[in-house]
Structure formats: structure tokens, C-alpha cells
Image (tube, rainbow, N blue to C red):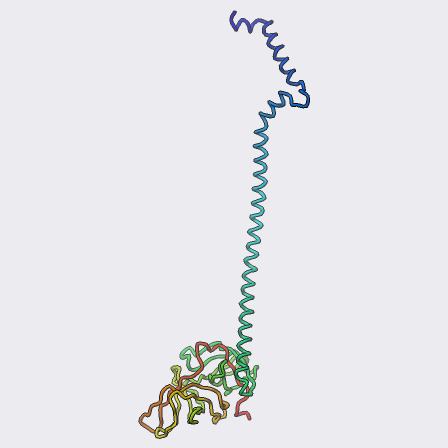
Length: 277
């Protein structure tokens, strides 16, 4: 008998269906505390799918949290950058103020021997045509600055004198290296007297020293004599670097000033001068 005829046989088909039904019933019979065969088959079929779905959900959740944290960190980074910027600026300002305070204190201590009121000021500009002629400072008549007040650097070396114009918060200073300056000076060793003027190139020379005199020593220190009644006596000016006798009545005495134009940031204005006494 062929297989097709067996299938068409109703008794054979009924037997097959009955046998399959028994198998289904047997899979529903609990085996004590163990899972049924159907449950095992279902678990094995759907466990990988469930695992994949749970893993995907966890990945999406963790990715969302990372994106959220990344956005928060980006905002926090921007905030910290701004905070660091302002703290850096504040530090620079405080450092500058501390440096100026220390410089002003040093300046006042260095000029204490003059027994004059010291007005600290800062140089805010120079003559653009020639730096060795004049400077501009940030003090004016509201700070009791008038013309012809002596000006020194923070080491107490002579820089020049105040001159017009004098505004509320600014004033001009004629440097001793300017051709327009004139300071009564004397040498420390032999008390040689003369008038110090600038050459406009960073140095000075002393006028009116008789060529036939033996006064003047190379390397000697020059200081103010006070005879001009503008600059008090005893302020250091510079040092003689050369002496020569030219044709005429007077010697040519070249002086190197002590003040350094490049480091001329903080200066001292001497409030009282001899002409006011």
C-alpha cells in the first residue's frame, strides 16, 4: 500500500491525529516543580528574542543618559571657562594693584630723606617726536600738581620737573635729558657747580664750568645743588662719563643720568619745592 493511500485511509488519519493529540496533552502535564515541555520549547525559542530586546532597551537608555550627561558637561565646561577667564582677569588686576602698592611704598621709603610730600604717579605717555624730551603723567591740579615740581623715579633719582599744561588729571614732565631742561647741580667729590641740560639723545652735559679750572672728575657722581630754588639739594642725578676742553671758556662735561627711560613707569612728584618756602 502506498503512502498516499494510507493518508486517504480515514482510520490511519484518525490514528495519526489521536497520537498527535496525546503528545499535546502530555506536554501540558506538569512534571512536579519542573517546567512543561512546551514551556521549555517556548523559553528556548523566545529567550534570545527577549534578551535582544532587553539589551536594546538598556543600550538606548544608557545612550540617552550619556547624551544628557554630555550636554550637561558641555554646559558646565562653558561655565567653568567663563569663571576661569574672570578669575584670571581678577588675578591680573590684583597682581597689578599689589605691584603698584609695593612700588609706591618703595618709592616713598627711598625718598623719605628729602622730608617732602611725595605724590606717586604713573607715566602714561611720552613725546612721540622724541621720548627723551617730555613725558605725560596721570596726576593734575586736582592732585595738587602745579608746574616746576621736582620729579624722581622710584629709586630717588632725578627725572625732571612738571610743566604746563597741567589738567585735572594729567600733567607734562620735562625730562632732564631734554634740551629745554636746566638743573643746578654739583659734583659730590669736589663740589663743582654747573647747570645740567639734556642733549635730547638720552644724556646730559654740564654747562658753565671754566676750562682752566681743575674741577670735575670722570666717574664722579652728580647731584642737585638747590641753587636754582626748584630742585631740593641732594637728589642724585647721574655720573660723569667724559670731560673734554673745547675751544672757548668752558669744559664739555658729559653726564649719564641714573634714571632709565625704559623702566620709567612709576614716578614721584615732590609736592614742596624751595621756591615755595
